[in-house]
Amino acid sequence: MKLLYKLIPAIHSFLYRLTKGRFGGKMFGFDVLLLTTTGRKSGKEHTAPLGFIRDNGNYVICASAGGGPKHPGWYFNLTSDHQVTVEVMDKRITATAEVALGAERQRLWDALVAVAPNYAGYEKSTTREIPMVVLKPITQV
Image (cartoon, rainbow, N blue to C red; front, top):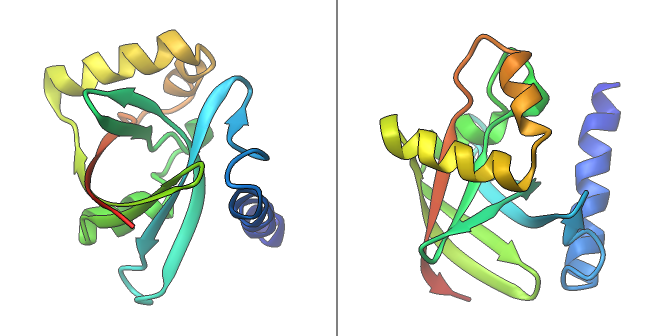
């Protein structure tokens, strides 16, 4: 099962890059980006396909882990190293990741749930507060 959880995102990322987002750029009507972080322990790059919303020129992602009890690995990576790479369709962007807090987090959560109502169920299925992460573009590569 663990292999499957690694294989599916790898295939998704491969096809996304191959087709410049024409395949895998939307999932359940939700826009998808590729987030590449640097492993906090391994130092290796890790890429995850994630749904996102836009906010004031930034990309906003959610560390839902499907409503699981723990934050996803990529979340811990970006809290250790805030510089990430974001791929949106055919654009490759260097960005800084910032975890939204308080009222800002709630505003972004509400905006996310308005676009993707299934996330409301994730919040109900876990005891942790699901982090909202703002990806602020620095450069386009």
